[in-house]
Image (tube, rainbow, N blue to C red):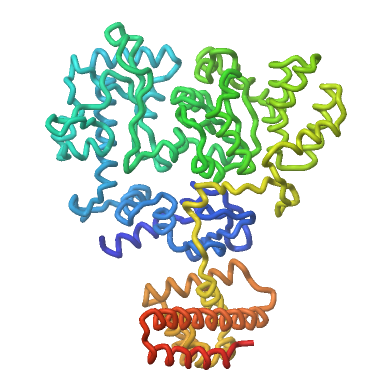
Length: 594
């Protein structure tokens, strides 16, 4: 792909607008900032520059153009990011060749074609029209059915066992690729793979950019011919595109509303989400019947810290639901529970009267208050055994609280209800494992847990402190050329090759322009952005401190390098090499920086 097309895409897209689709940005001077999505942090160190059309995290070091951001946050290779951003920018990739496609891109095309196939089956077949009638009875409009690309997979009695597979093979894809997309089942190598979904209502599952990456399917038990056709719900297995632990159904449509409302409503099913959006509750997503994961919570946290969960009282204490709530509490979400009537879900409420769902949301209870009332409803607070059961049920919830004032409040309230002293409740609480409180940066308290979020574990990276100092020193020198005199040739020799070349060139000609060298301009923009985002009060003091730190780190790295060489020489029994390295270490030690 030519550089001109890449530049054309960059020219048409505003990085602020793209990043805002993922993060809640706040204005700070000429730039915008947010908490970095690529590593765990308490304060925002992720900056976006509208002027330079680039982003930079000064905590983990991630940075670059809009392409770099999309590749990193979506886990895409460049061709896939190019395709995605070109579509968003309205740029046609005229010289994009099929042989240039990655496996992921081909699977995305398979999923999109499969969606078109299922949609046509819904609208053009007699059974499909009966499925539409089911949707209408549930309260869906034709516009909603089309928007969410709902479909129908033909039953074997109509389309055979390979209707979709044959259709995709006819479009140039192999049966092996259809299996890899999760749309066909290959049980025996001697037989041709057959369609996974047959005679079912189809719900396409979208990624954050509204690309279809998988499917959920509901059996058509409302049709007489399909009464006993397998489990009620059947989902696609994990594939290269789809991982249920990483997907929130409806997030592609809900992300902006979640940010605007500063709240995410979490439900369990596809219909819950679709009907909620149709009724105007567009900040609704679903975990698709699975327990919440750290990764899903990480996605939600990009937009809000307020989480409303909807489940009935029977599932509230279930282990999967409880695990999800525990994880959300560990990530410091403010959680409220939407209490559901017995045997009702959000879709049922909305189908009957959307005002019922509105009232349920307005009546949501704080998670701790919910468990307190649940304990009193389940056990008898007037008997000794009941008091013990209430304490055993509710004390673990107190232990999870992130603030000592809240802990004290609920201890007093529980003591009052049980007719015992607050001291006795506190004594029982101390006997329980876990929940050790630590002071947080904002003055509240949170639990010190060894179970760090997998989402942040997977995304985090160690920052190269030496490179950070190099960037800052160069940025300061680019801002004020007099700072070049603070460095001698020995200092410049310590820099990595690209920075060494730039600094040496600046010392010769400090008015040099870098506009004609794109690679060098990117480095220069990155270094200047760092200074603009974190403007030092005293630039002269700042560069002196940076140079001292840089010299010290460079010296330590050199010493470590010689230490490794010495160990290697000793293992190999190379006395000559050992003597040579020892001399270097002695010389380096004598010239230790202050």
